[in-house]
Image (cartoon, rainbow, N blue to C red; front, side, top):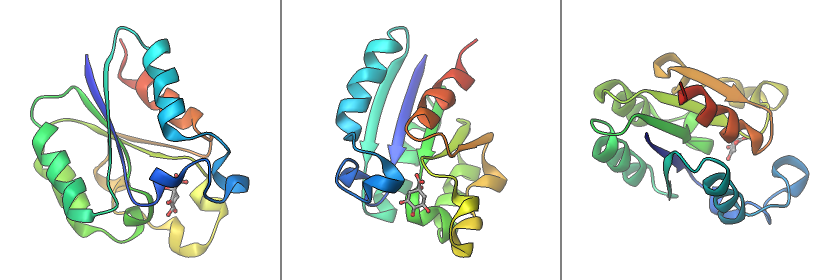
Length: 138
Ligand code: DQA
């Protein structure tokens, strides 16, 4: 089973960025942990702060991988282009957020990803990614 985690803007700063919202762990440390715990899954990780690069990665993997776990971060709330890319590919996408975006500012209540995602997992901290991986397992 080939899965990829795609993280959007500012998620490269996890561990340093607003730790009260996003926690103290870097994504690299957490990803190493995930690879250890999900040994049967071929797990990849891609992060970009650039919308077009996120779209490019979705197109690149979106006809061959079994699943995409996408935290589009701020682009969740703005990007028609990422929503269209998800619609264009055949690989199912699970939308993930670390925080419960519905408890936060109103602009975070809108998602261009949710209507085209297989499912949405949010508000469980980094554990949201664990749950997303599990959702693809038999
Ligand atoms: C986020 C929530 C978004 O609103 C925010 O812009 C992020 C992170 C989350 O994982 O909680 O960058 O996607």
